[in-house]
Amino acid sequence: MTADLKAVLIGYFPKQIVPCPEFASARGVEEIGSVSTHISKGPANWITFWRHNDLWLFSSPDLAWSVVPQAERSAFRLFAYKLFPMRIVEAVQTEFSIPDLAVTPLDDSFLSVGYDVVCRTSETEFGCSPLSCNLLAEKIPVNRDCLLADASAAFELALKMETLPSEPGPYFVMEVFRQASVRA
Image (cartoon, rainbow, N blue to C red):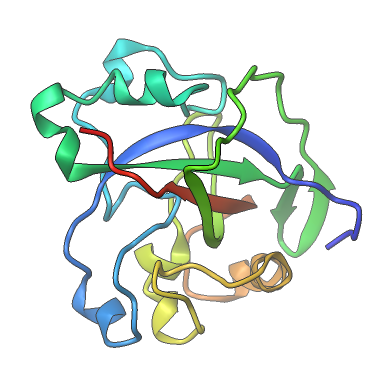
């Protein structure tokens, strides 16, 4: 990882938190905070509102919450994501140009919960987070949110991801934030 590489806030996304899968709870994981929505799912039919930005996230907390029915909001938590402008394919890092997204800055209610390595095989939403989706958390130390503790560990993992049992790349490294207060 380049020392001067800065992560850029790319958006917000509401996710339904489900009980921790057995494979992860045995490793001390309490919640799946991954970027992927394969375990902790997003709202049903969120995409049909077409309120997302070019990276398939929402540019403000209000837009993110607007796709969650009021009666279901207590089952969701709001996440925010910062993306390092780097794409990793077959252990080679290349620059990734992040589009201008006009994202509302993070406020004090968001706390960093760790770093994720996630694939994005098309120009749509981010896909699998191999730590949870491919059960790599069984072999790699993760925190209570099934994420890596620091960006260096995430880049190290991303560089060797395609040699591990996981999804095909390209891979991206993201910092994950969770809103501390629950919105009713």
